[in-house]
Structure formats: structure tokens, C-alpha cells
Image 1 (tube, rainbow over the protein chains, first blue to last red):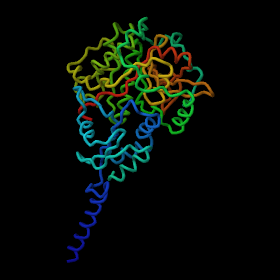
Image 2 (cartoon, one colour; image 1 turned 120 degrees about the horizontal axis):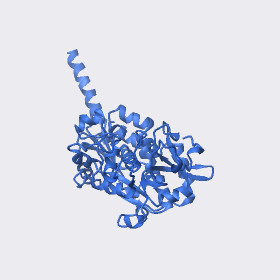
Image 3 (tube, helix red, strand yellow; image 1 turned 45 degrees about the vertical axis):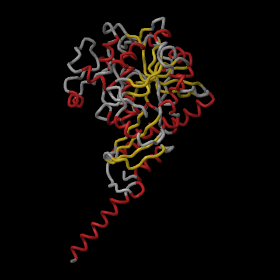
Image 4 (tube, rainbow over the protein chains, first blue to last red; image 1 turned 60 degrees about the vertical axis):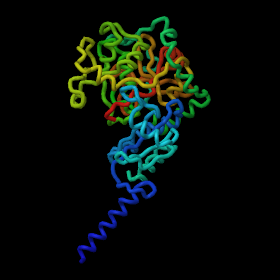
Amino acid sequence: VTNQRASLYLAAVAFLLFAFSGEGGVLTPAGPRQIVVLHETAEVTPAQSQMFVALRSGANADYLASKGHKLLILDDDAKGVDGNPAPLVAKLNAESVPPPSLFVLSGERVVFKGALPATAEDVLNVVKGAGG
Amino acid sequence: MQLNNKYIDYDFRTAPQRYYRGSIMPRNAVELCAELPAYEDVVPPIPSNRWKEIVEHIEATKSGIEWLISRIFNQAQEGSCVGNAITQMMEMLQAKQFGKGLVTLLSAISMYQLIGRSPSSGAVVSHGLDKLREVGIVPLDTPENRQRFGGAVMPHTGFYTKRPAGAAEVAANFKADEFYVIRTYEGLVTAGLVGDGAVVGRAGHSIKYLRPTFQGAKLLYTYVNSWRESWGFAMAGFKGGFGADSEKLIRQSARWAFAVRSTVTPSWI
């Protein structure tokens, strides 16, 4: 009986961790994420450009790498090799979030979508809140 | 960054013989690029009274595009500077878009072969942009690239290297997507402040412009050269490889400049 209780307890804890580690309590296990920033290159400001570099270097880049996250910073009409819209960008554009926007994906599933925050730290906070 | 006056307004024409140039400046530059979109039409020039404030923020936060550089190039004894500047730009764009860990190192000679007539002929910057749009760049011959692309890789130098089978298909993954010709000094400075930089040609040499900085009240434009890490001043963790131009030379460079703002997205990304 004690073993059964312990198993039930562990299962409950695992479920709660699984259930509330993502945005808004969506069922999202913590783990590697694909993070995508979509922007319209013509509208990139100096501050955004600095944020992109800040995400690519120093402690921010180290954090993303340590968690196995992949960060893509793409134009919202980025093309693939065949000249057609890149499939990932086409998929995220269908989410109807105006650029500049931020998406966090767990596997194929979008677990966060919203406006791009103002700083690299804020971007990482969103990622952490989405189980990353 | 450690500015060194020796490498400010460096006259490439008087460089020691071991350094090769190779940027050809035709007379009809404006006509050659007339049909291409102008950077200034898409990105409104930033007023000059904001330049210093933006530069100070970039430097305080270490968020200049020099941090996207993966390596300092060595064009050796070939006039392939245009190929080197363009290839450097493409590696930096990959670093921005996909991350430094996903940068595919590229073969500068694979670009120069398309636009030069001989190892020392040099090439025209605008022709490089044409080939970057139409053909792309073949990956560098490294163990990692051989694992991914098989034999469709090329060395960094060696004008007469035969293009391998499959080079065209692989190079198509490393083409320019969005690109603009820069026509003014203000446009060139703005390109540096918004993280685009530019490929420029001046004094018979092509380099990758990075961003403005200030030496006191004087605006300088930093660039990364392709003359090894032993040339130039230190920047972004590299021991050397960098120079800077003041306004007179920036204005010369603005006659022959373009910015690529994005590359195509390869299928494996």
C-alpha cells in the first residue's frame, strides 16, 4: 500500500510539473524549444538589431545553448531555396500575430505566440515561462 | 575594441606586397545598379544627431554585429577580396538568422570564381551581388561540411579549383534573399546602426563594413578585412583583422556599397 501511495504521489507531482510548466497552464513538458522571431526587415530598429545580437552572444546565447534551444530570427516573408515562403515562416504567419513577433515551439506545437518583447532578457523570460 | 591609428583610413594601395586587393571600379556604377532597390527607400536614414547615442548603446551592451563573426578570412595571394567580403557577410547573416552554432562556413573562392577572370584579375562588387542572388556560395571544405554535403565543398583559396559535382544545388542554399544598393553616406551609416553593415569597394579593395564608432567627436566606420588576423586592430574577441574609415573614405565607399538583409532559409533549418 505504501508503494502504491508513493507511486500515486510521484505521478501526481509529475503531472503537475508537466501541466503547468508552459504558457497559461497548457500541457507542455519542459525541454528544448524552437524559438522564432519574425520581423519585417524594413522595420528593424537599432534597438531590435542590438537585441538580436544580444541573443546571439554572451550569457543569453550560453543559456539557450545549455538548454538545447534553437533560436531563429527570420524575416516574415523569408524564402526557402525554391523561392517559395519558408515552410516554418508560412506556418507561423498563419498564427496571425503581426511582426515583430515571438513564437516558442515544443516540437511542432506552438506553446507561445505574441508580440516581440523589448529586450533580450524579456525574450528569455518568455522562453522560460514556456517551459524552456 | 582597441582602435589603432595605423589602421584608420588605411591606404590599401600602399599595403605590403603580401596583401592582395582586387576590387574593380567601373565608371558606370550607378547605371549598373540602377535597377536594384535602394536601401534608403526602405530604411529611412537615421538623423545624424542620434548616431552617437546609438553607437554608445551598442558599445555599452556589446551588441554590435562584429559579435556575429565566426572567423577572420585570409584571401592569401589572390585578388579575391570581393568574394571574401561577400562570403564574410553571408556567414554573419547566417549567425544572425540561425545562430553561430548553425553557421555553415563557406568558400570565398567559390564566389570569386564566378566573378573574376584570373587569380589576380579582381572583380566588381556589383557582379558579386548578382551571383549571390543567382548562384550562391559553395560550403567550405571542412570535416563538418563534408559530412553534410559530401564532396560538394571547396577550399577558401585556389582560383583554379574545379567546381565539384553538386556544387550548384548546394550553393543554392546560400543565396541572398533580400538585398539593397546603398547610395548615400547617410544610408551607409544607417545600415551600420541597424545591424546590416555593407559590402563596399574602395581604393581597389573590397571589405565588409560593420558599424560606426566614435573617436572623440569623429565618426569612424569599422570594417572586417580579409588579410588574416595579424592585420588590423582587435575587436569582438579577435586579436586583429579590423580597420576603420573616417568620413572621407566612408563617402568613397558609399559609391560602391550594398547590404543583404537576409539569406534564403535552407531546408534543414
